[in-house]
Length: 453
Ligand code: DCP
Ligand code: MG
Image (cartoon, rainbow, N blue to C red; front, side):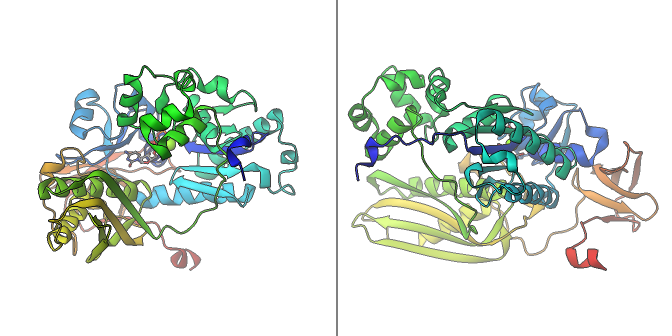
């Protein structure tokens, strides 16, 4: 069937994309009333830590995701620097995803705080407004949904985009962030894209951007002046076709309901056979860092690290190794991947390298959170975690026998300082204790069984 002759767009704005604002930081501000309206940075707080996210108050000082925490401290020294509390992020994420699934059976989560929803198959019994997918009706629905998100999350804001494709819906949700809603009326997709940088197109990274820049293409409008053949010559078959379609807002990818993620992996194919072992190790290290980042973003960790190697003659080998406990640490994944490579004969050259992590658990070694991901060469060697010593990390939940629940404000020199407040209380008092004070314990949310008691 001559698929390319059929316009690849829906006639109505039926794809909704929702993305929570400053997700981890917003959860921290919800649960720590004294931090509301203040700069908050969540990430690794150690010497090699990187920023996972920053509240919009901290972004005003130039703090960004993936920046070193060192740099973030220099830009915004008065921010609260907190390590992550994944149980809280996962719980909040589940509430949002449950809400979205009550709207439509077709919900496709992209990460903990982001999902597509197909409004074309929405539950009309619950949402009669959605029988009509006109712009006013999807706009009213999206505002209602944003209000519901705030209700189920205890006050978090979400930015929403609604359009005729996944591509445009995702572009739209980003246009008026934070706390924004943009509906793209069908027929106006191309006008919206034209002034935007080519980097708005998914898959257009630094290398593609540079190739396009060299032929004078900066915006989507510039891209439209190239023929499909020219783009294919410039960027190869797959990329060329993809870019040609998306530059014209041609995207009919379906919203696919969540499938259980069995593994997270990253691989690369190379134009020339690789023979340099040091380079291969560097590539594996970089891929391991990417895998770790994706695991973290999804709030997952895994026990089995696998490498995939395709040799010059296209035989494909894989080797794996299983850890005693799940990890999401880039250094651990990278070290195992390099060890696995050491056992393979790659002297004939390598076409493809990949790293994956499977045996996933939906929890993370929080004490390993936030090692730096830049400067792969210097990733520290990390011991495989068997059992970790209790440490008072900034931001963690604690409970005191008399004072009740609070969070660690800071610790050092044998002293731990706690602020006693929760989402349900006003900003609370600060007290300091000896690090080994028996009255002070780490707090964990009750498991469902405990709750039933
Ligand atoms: N995240 C991370 N490391 C990154 C990027 C993100 O750990 N390099 C985590 C922290 C974020 C969450 O994933 O809170 C969601 O990622 P987003 O890209 O949606 O970022 P935010 O929700 O924090 O901010 P925005 O308001 O821009 O969506
Ligand atoms: Mg977000």
